[in-house]
Amino acid sequence: MNICLYGSGSRKIDEIYTDAAYELGCKIAEHNHTLVFGGGDTGMMGACARGVHDNNGKTLGIAPEWIGNFEPLCEECSEFIYVDSMDERKNKFLENSDAFIISPGGIGTLDEFFEIITLKKLKQHDKKIIVYNIVHFFDKMIEMIDEMGEKGFLYKQEELFKATDSIEEIFRYIEE
Image 1 (cartoon, helix red, strand yellow):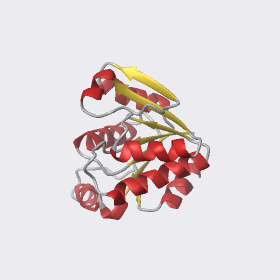
Image 2 (cartoon, helix red, strand yellow):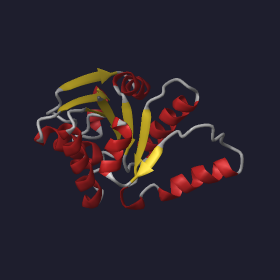
Image 3 (cartoon, rainbow, N blue to C red):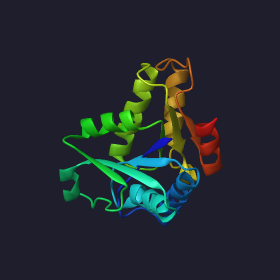
Image 4 (cartoon, rainbow, N blue to C red):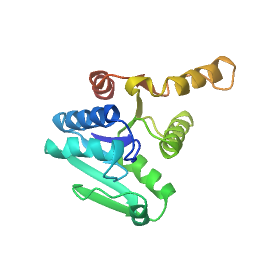
């Protein structure tokens, strides 16, 4: 299974997050899945990719070449797809992934998350989406989404995503 990780590429984040991402990468490799990610060598992306690589797993990086001006790209990817734009990158994530894990990140991560759940809501895919809620990072966002539903701004016809802080629960959900 190809599992796409959305998450920060920042070098400034606390080790509690990158340690959790590294552990996630180890488990992705142990379960014989392939990591699909934005190709970054730092932050959540880089830590997860190192966990996969250190356990002889496979990785697929997807990024525009110019993104290297903002963050270093992972040189140890099993495969790398270069694209022209961030929109094309997101389309390639969708085409090449069977499930999505959203880990702590910034504006880019939120953009990817909201697009993938919107596409699921609009029945453009039926892939599992998991919010990896490390040390309650996404609590306020989840609370906001719940409130939007309570106030009638969202239809709750189906579960669009699952939130958890447990790697074991991530794999139970993905693999069921």
